[in-house]
Length: 115
Length: 112
Image 1 (cartoon, rainbow over the protein chains, first blue to last red):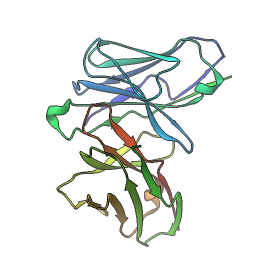
Image 2 (cartoon, rainbow over the protein chains, first blue to last red; image 1 turned 60 degrees about the horizontal axis):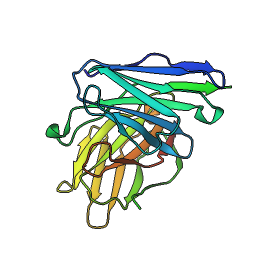
Image 3 (tube, each protein chain N blue to C red; image 1 turned 135 degrees about the vertical axis):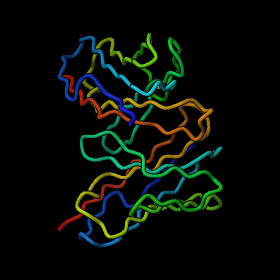
């Protein structure tokens, strides 16, 4: 079974803090994704990565950065957390397009509260 | 504009009853359509994936249909169980990496 794990289920941070959200997958997937999910808005893509050290902006990258130094690990960084970044953050992974249509496997999510 | 619209927003049914959730999309190009189940406080889990050439796919008590001409899909749940209480999300894949368009979901509550 594919396993996608996220470092924290719940996180509370203060405005202005630097926040790291970690995601690890154990299926040697090339693609990894970070989404945020807010009530009434559905899932929105923040960043994705299709290879080590590669990254692409999604629909809402402002205020976020990412890092992918190893294939299995994809980190989301909030450089200076703000209250409007309070949300549920979901990581996902998948094989690359050659395994089309590729299945995305999601982690359990991190509920981040910024006060 | 690429959009995925789901209806109803929420639904309450009695255990053992059937229900159908709807999804309309305007995504182009279209590659495939997925249905996910998301339990409260958890990540989404895939139920079905259908390409444009498939018009129905089943996964146990879940049956998804796709009409690529009218750009509509439905998810039918048969003999509902309490564990079916969750949000069901329709997702359309536009065919390139990172190009998944998510609906806002239908929240289903199954009552005893």
